[in-house]
Image 1 (tube, rainbow, N blue to C red):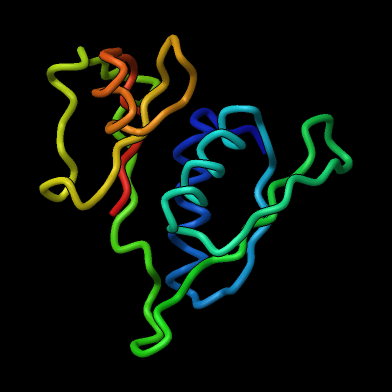
Image 2 (image 1 turned 45 degrees about the horizontal axis):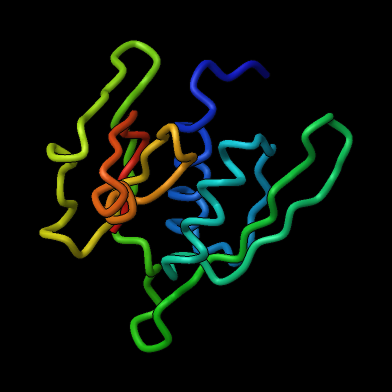
Length: 134
């Protein structure tokens, strides 16, 4: 199967797995997806992850989703794509949007690598707005 937007596919797989109540999922890997996964882990949106070499040349990313102990709902409330292949979205460091009034994060692809909106503001770099999460 050929996917025209691998980041949107990655986000949709996480969203669908969480809605279905799955605890783990496997996603075909790429360097960009690995960087986004590390950010999601560092920010506390996923429980853990593991990179595994598989049949395809990039391997797989195994992600353990995080759920609230009391309500049993997923930690991730909303997950969405900003920049897409048909309409790329670039921003300066001064124009980076605050997601959910600063409670969520935006993930950017910059000259300093794939980083969060807070890191981009502190470094003073802009870039392509990949996705948001809260």
